[in-house]
Image (cartoon, rainbow, N blue to C red; front, side, top):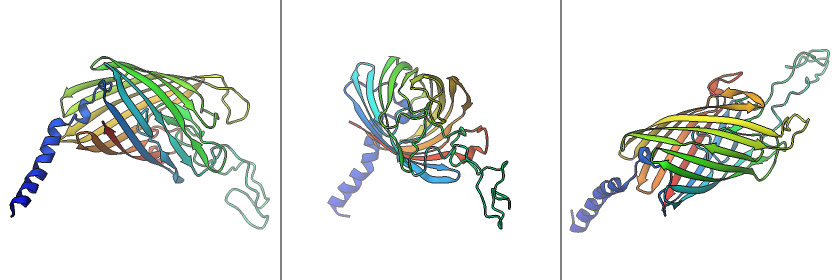
Length: 317
């Protein structure tokens, strides 16, 4: 082996150790970004709902504990104070009103169709609702925030979120966010305020931590009588997630379970679950993949009927 080769091999071997010495492991991340530090996250996801595999996708995520997915920028602007903004852009290949009930399908009198008799119409039989989502009525959630896709063939969702987070103590903080739908103000797509209380406890530095965050969401919209329009001008929702994070030499695993629902007007609650694995490949660069089930106890169907795959990475500077 030449001297140059020996130097290159020694440098290659020493880089992971040097990087590991400077790395802030996933389990040890603070409630708020340190003053003068910034971070950019990019999440890509695809919906894998039963009967609609891959039909919605984009710059978004569905992880149970991720409130600011998609394109997310945050910065420590003051001691213990973080401010940030996030933008999602989800694209749907189906109409947002595919979850609505429709009349029976007429059939030729000489044939017996799946949803009709030889008489042409079956009054008691209706075709299935398509892609009704985990709540049965087309509603999806971004960590508690309800939304519907639009009614055209190629509908979008791109809410903008602006927030501030303050760490009162290293383990606990307060968070205030404004969610602004910048496209279709339809269905649940309404401006909303979010008040959250993030909590993180490091049980073993570099190895184990737990996190919890309860949220209260208050949204506003113009009500209407159409099925896609809100039936009240105010929507009060709640959401809480709790998870445990393991880390080992840069690799990490996070399991998070959430629970949420609408308090006013009342709506049955839901239980999302996500499993996220990743690796801090450089001290300032994380990559990860996550699988989510939108509702473990759906009103109809099974828990695996509504699921999502997320790929993401974050860079600090």
